[in-house]
Image (cartoon, rainbow, N blue to C red):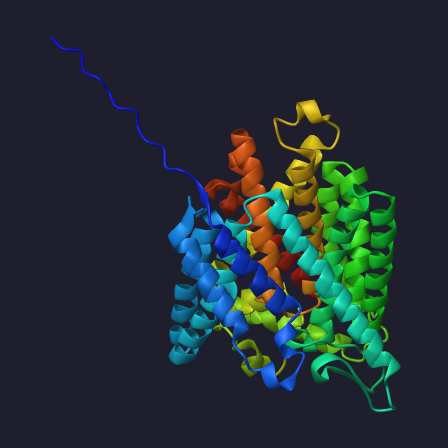
Length: 443
């Protein structure tokens, strides 16, 4: 009997879609720096859409393998959820419009950044774009302040700061709101620290200047949520690097309760005349959730029912999209944050030889993105920025970093599993529960 020869199974060759990443870089520059808006003549050009479409199509054609993890799958469900919630709340076409908007401006960027940031070098390129954008925004803000004529201060592309209780700098596009500008600057602080630690003497001196510029920019935004974000970021950095896991967990659980109580007593926002109005919005948002627990009141319906935004991204999502929607949104955030924290604590005291072939560089990138997202999560507690593009850009880069580390150490794959996502979805409700308890005590 002839011996049957088995043919080896061909393993598909990985393809990293270099051209798709090139267009992703152009997209990132267009979104963050927005050079096409420097002049009125080119401000309406659709560079952002063109670069996003080209990057997306090239990724589908040339990227192998395409990574579809638990976050990707659940986010694919999100547009359907938005539509169903809209119809059940008597706003069907509005739900369709919101679902389309989410797919284009949130889901596609998350897919691109999480799949195309395949190497540490690619992540460095995106980091440099972020830092460059932040410095241009600070310079623009400085020019706005220096050119202030008693009513307006002018910057690039007609961006301006307006007289009021204080002059608050702005930039172009969605950075026209000082809160969004401040949030981005806070999220760049860990990136500046990353390069500060890695560079030579000249590089260290340069990034010390970058950090000073970021702090100056944060001050010029006049955003109290942003100021709380930078102070909170420093506190979380100290806790993560010096405190035990139990104390960190206790601090994270208590933070929403303490912040809400202090706000209700004027401790954090004594200079803000709308402090109680913000707390009333949080309270109304929780009651919207209790009245429509499964699918919420429908995306973008919070303002119709309350009159203003919630000024709290967590409550805003829970109120509009209910238990299912918030669990997906919060679960996606918590999955990355818990994975990042585990990696920091797992390798912080180990030498290079004990890091299971994970490079110090990759771990440094992961830690940087962890703290950038800490900055987002703190500022998002005082702002309704639940679907801002910044969240999905940084969430995508953080997801890519997690998957690169999992690829190097497959034993860590449980950190990004569907089972872990389910746990994280439950953990994310701690913020809502603690805010509700604080409101019952303080109001």
